[in-house]
Structure formats: C-alpha cells, structure tokens
Image (cartoon, rainbow, N blue to C red; front, side, top):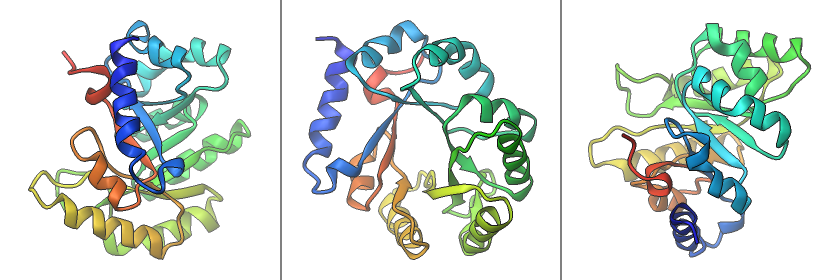
Length: 216
C-alpha cells in the first residue's frame, strides 16, 4: 500500500482509541503539495483536504473538484477580504473567520452565488499580538452577529495555540467555550498534538506533515 495511505491509516488507528471516533474528521492538509502527491489518498476514498492559500488552491483543485464533487475543501489559513469571493466559490469550509469585515464580505459573496459554506470562528486563544482571531471574551458577540445579522452557518470554533508547552490548557479552554456556545464541531489539533485535541473533543483535525511528509 502507498506510504501516504499507510500514514493516514496509522492516524486513523490512533483516533479509533477514542470513544467519539465516528464524529472525528481528518482534514488532510495538502498545502504546497502537488495533486499527484495527494492523489493516492483521494483514490483511497478520503474527501477532506485543507489549503491555506486561495490562489494555490484554485490552481490545484478547481478543475479536479468540478469533476469530483465529493471532495470537501477546507480553507485553514488567514483569509484576506479581497480573496473572499474566490474562496467562497472554491471552498466548502472556512476555518479562519476572524473579523466582522471578513464576515460581511463572505456573507455577501455566498449570497451572490447562492452557496452556503460552513464556518469556524478563529479564536486568539493565547492573546498573541501576531496571531489572528477573535479575543476569547468577544467570541459570543461575534458569533451572534454572524448568525443573526449575516445568516452564516457557524459550526464551531478553531484555534492555533501558542507554542509554549501549555497546549493542554488552551485546548481545554477552547473546548469549554465551544461547548458553552452549543457547537457540535471543533477544529483543533495538528500533526504534533492531534491526540491531545481528541481528548478535548475536537472533531476536525488539521493534519499535514504526519500524512504527506515534511514540506520542502
């Protein structure tokens, strides 16, 4: 069997140890890798893939996705407003909804083409100046705005915790906030910490290098 598929199956086996396994989806982060490198996992039947740049995703996936309707594409990187229209056309999920102006543009763009995306609100869980995201104590108000004013389908929260060896604390905090808002989905955990994220009820794991190998 293909090496990429083997790595994917190892991750699946690890996740199966959790009692909520059937609720968990792996978003295979395929950014920087060409379609030929990703294809074995597509052929294996996997459908959830993550990209962090609209332009790269369009070149790589647009034609393929038009012919393969089962593919679900996830925008996991910082999204600029001037790329929002294109992102709405291409993606099915956006994990990085992080400000009101972006929400306004996305809502308008999806209405224009009669397409409904699923969104995660990105939370700046560690209050880091260099990171995007809604401050923890403003998430409730932002969610209410997106849901009521812009009629967006918000399905959960997303965060990238600080790299300070306190991941456990941040995952716990985000999971509790996610639960308090009544969300059933949670985008949390990457190659290095996905099992910890599973322990804190993450349902979407954004895993790249552990599947596809290190990026060049």
